[in-house]
Length: 120
Length: 106
Image (cartoon, rainbow over all chains, first blue to last red):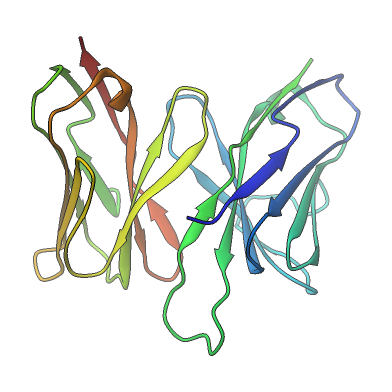
């Protein structure tokens, strides 16, 4: 299957600082990327959907000014956690949807390995 | 009630046993993912299916659209199969089940 990478795999930062997480589709073009967060022993929660070249669509309850998403190319999306606080500590996972010409039917999502963020 | 329910929540079995994990959903879907999440956190897509049955190695996934039910089977289970298995349905967006934590004991 297609490969999605995330960088960094884990990051520890001080409260009040900003952290950027990169998500790349390595061998396919992804018009749509998704950002999820996962708390221990819980399911993935969709934070936002990012389409290349346009503004991200945030899920209810997710602060768009705190979680800045940029999808500048078909292979790269970034999530910046601004002014991080300890409650932002979580596992952040991105996924990318393969783009097939013509659209129509659903295309499979491929998941990145995740980034574990710890805010002290 | 969750839109996607998995059972069991936890499953411990001996190496070699045949494993079945079930997923029931209550929404209309176009397809369904079975995902595997290892302790390190990374998620691997095992299957995406919209009808019938798919097989990959020791893994088999089936889906019955009319009954809104899917199963994931693992034959000849091995300790390396220990992971959380997540069912995710594709409707307006991807909706995840709460996962099944599988532990295979040598």
